[in-house]
Image (tube, rainbow, N blue to C red):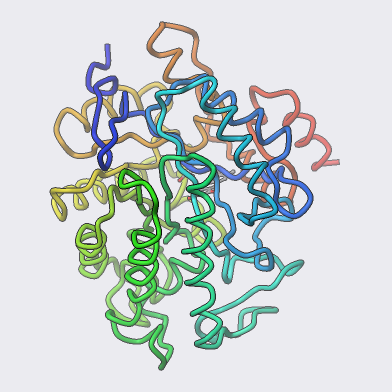
Length: 384
Ligand SMILES: Cc1cc2nc3c(=O)[nH]c(=O)nc-3n(C[C@H](O)[C@H](O)[C@H](O)COP(=O)(O)O)c2cc1C
């Protein structure tokens, strides 16, 4: 069963043992300045036991001052031993799995408890407009964070350019800055070019994986996937160009996503009443496959499909519409998912209630409120 999902696939110069891709999922349970806590480690131990071909550790900030979550993870020299421990725990249970860290800057998604920033001034509450040299320093922070991350023994980096975080904001046509970081497509993609070139120049292992997650269509005016600062209708001309640019810059994969969870949540993660939005994700993945022949394409938004995700994922891989089938909420509902599918175990399927997102929005530790007692209690406490 599911021979395609269980077939191996190259990602960069490494080989993933299957096509199950555990997406970055913030648990908001770091401690003391963004260190992975025992709870964080326990979550990734479970993911490791699930034997996903590729697993991405949730968004890790490259700076300590602009955070979306009160307990978000931060990559720093001081936190390095804790990240090393996370990698050790993961490798103990899944030595063959590919493990990646997602690096981000929260930008305008940063909470008001931290330093909220914006790249162009649209009057966003509490946000500071970034100066040219501040963006230069953020670029340098990504490159430095990647070099630090490599010291932990991970396989590579997922460079976050999606979901309204700074890496996505800089790409969108609405970024009409008049310095080198805005305006023309060339300027808006400078961030990708300089960071990817910087990471590649500093990496120690020639096999270090570098991929990126993109929101193909953000569904906001002037957002990624529109044609102008006031565009609203989907136009993927620039997005396809970005995929080709990633290929030219030596990316190993592109992880296709959409939307901005804080503004257009169903576009990113369909719920039962908006289920058919998953079809957009399938279409975007196929467009990415057509735009690039060299880099692997990871699809998203399968969780709402429940058990049908397996048939449809297998079919998409078979037809060459996608290379990896990405699961977000399903990895919370059942971190052991691939292993259970393989061995015929009883899977806890995500019910797409997005209770995990509701916990996250309230800055609680977040996880599955259906199958995990700790998060059930968190949810009850939140609603008291
Ligand atoms: C609680 C929660 C945390 C998330 N954290 C991240 C994250 O750190 N990085 C990221 O790129 N996407 C994040 N996402 C988005 C998921 O990776 C995924 O794209 C989304 O849930 C849709 O996939 P699904 O339908 O399989 O859940 C998060 C989503 C949820 C619900």
